[in-house]
Each structure stands twice: as structure tokens, then as C-alpha cells.
Length: 179
Picture (cartoon, rainbow, N blue to C red):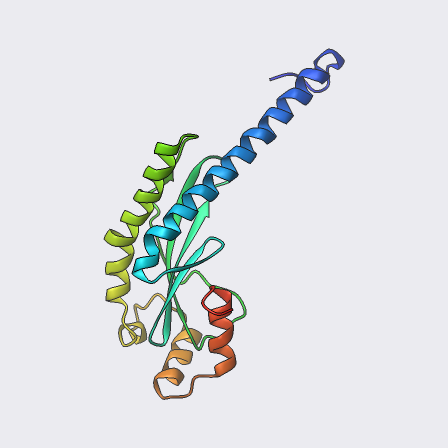
């Protein structure tokens, strides 16, 4: 790498920075291509995309996936989460689990982008779907539930027929299920 404090290396350094920016731009573009392919693959499972969130409504819950793109390279990690529709918080909370050991990567070619999208879909089928089946509305009320006490209270209210329409609408808006 050129030394930016050496005047003879200034042009080399500027070129190096420009090249890094171009590589990051290509990486972001490729990440977007993977997510678009993934969105098409999970749409039949009921997931709708909003940015890096993929969500579906299930009774008094929203089951959602958050795909995190690492800043240090062409890699993704998936968070598998549940939000109570009646949750009053004004932001999505990643209440769930992360496929922490699994880092999905892609390269700058079409075959790799397609493979990464397919791998993300496999994580949904093999990891997320069974996890969502485990955490029914009643199971979420148990002590080992992945949701907070406040979310449990909101779920109890919903199960008793006391869903706040404003909370439900905001939950849907936050995760791309309402327009």
C-alpha cells in the first residue's frame, strides 16, 4: 500500500482509495443481487421484503429474518426473529437467534451470487422454519421464551382480544407488511 504521507506516493494512494471504493460499490451491488434472488425464493413461503428484513404474519406474531451484510467483506449472517404484532416498541427488535456459526459468502460472479441466495434459502428451510414452529404463541409465554417480558405482556393482551390497532399497524409498517 502506498504511504499517504510520502508526496511521491500521493497519486498512488489516491488510486488505491479509488480502487477500494470501486470494489466496495461492486460488493454492495452484488449483495443487492443476492438479496433480490433470495426475496424471490422465500416469497412462496410467505415472506415479504423490506430492505434487509423478510417478514410474514402468523396469528398475533410477525416472523421475520434480518440479513446482516458484514462491512468487512462479501459475507452475510441471518437473524431469525419473532415480533409480537401488539408490541408497542417503535423499532424492530432482534428477539430470536442468529445462525452465528454460519457465515454465507459470495464472490463477484453470477454462479456465486445464485449459490449464496440458495444457501440463504436453505438456512430458512432447515434452521428458521423449525425454530418458528417451536415458538408458537403459547410457547412464547414460557420462561425460556426468546421474547422480552414486555413483548410477552403485549402477546397476553392480544390473546385476550386487546390488540392495539396502532401497535399492530406500526409492527406491520416496520417490517414491510403494510403500505
